[in-house]
Length: 379
Image 1 (cartoon, helix red, strand yellow):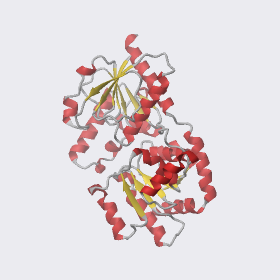
Image 2 (cartoon, one colour):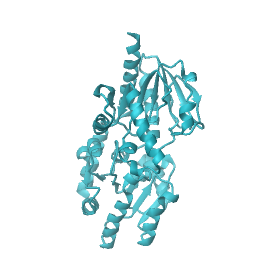
Image 3 (tube, one colour):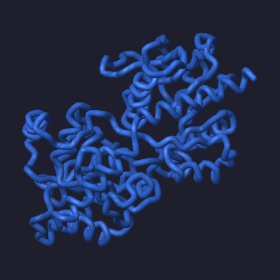
């Protein structure tokens, strides 16, 4: 079986984490499998040597910009002609590909919330490609039942073409231990972080709801709640998109209460999780909510938006709040900072819950999907 996978987004945050985990999972599963699969990996240089690749693979370069017209016009269909199947990890799959196609719809953010996209052209592009690709793909992988139902409802995709395969976390997310104590101390020292802090992590998009989070914490700090530690924000560039947050922080003079670390090296992220009192996850919309799972695996409690996909992932392992109600957020933050027993209980539940997610399972289910589709043509 010959399968092509487009991994050009492997350096991105969410989709990149998915691709790294999937490829590493393939490597582990196929070592103990009789299945013979040749992978062709389409990538845009440079490809990090930290990425674990399957044992049998070919590399094809393709550097056209993601979401561009040239990406569609010049997609290397002929160079992939030996492949029976293409796995494309996003909704902007190449329309010129005529063979078996598997795509990932990680969420329907661009389709359902067009007001969060910058221009009318971006909005048109999202609607056009979600519609075209959902009609053309032989299978669509989604991370949660919530997204499966959304795809059925908004794109009218038949249920049998949708497959729920939940994500997992990278192996370097672990609980605090003697083995990683020195590494963690080095990272905490590098950024001069306090002994206790709250953490939020993710890209800077409107649905991440960060301004709402700052407004809630500001109220607590203004009330003199000394048990509420500073907030550390990680995962987005400190460029012009961050100016609204930076202005808010400056206007209310909370520079000592909010630390914007920007984009940090990937290997430092686990230490930042382990050093935190809790993860605050105020998102209005998610397809899965990977930071929730990363926090649980790192052994810290999660305080999260009460939205369906996060409930699906964390179940009773998180403390929830209404992401539209600041009083609800304040109440949750007060509880997590004041109640050590609650924190311990959520940590224990989170560590148990995260055991249900692994890249081995993701890879195994995805390989079964490849085999199922390619065998259909051979019958």
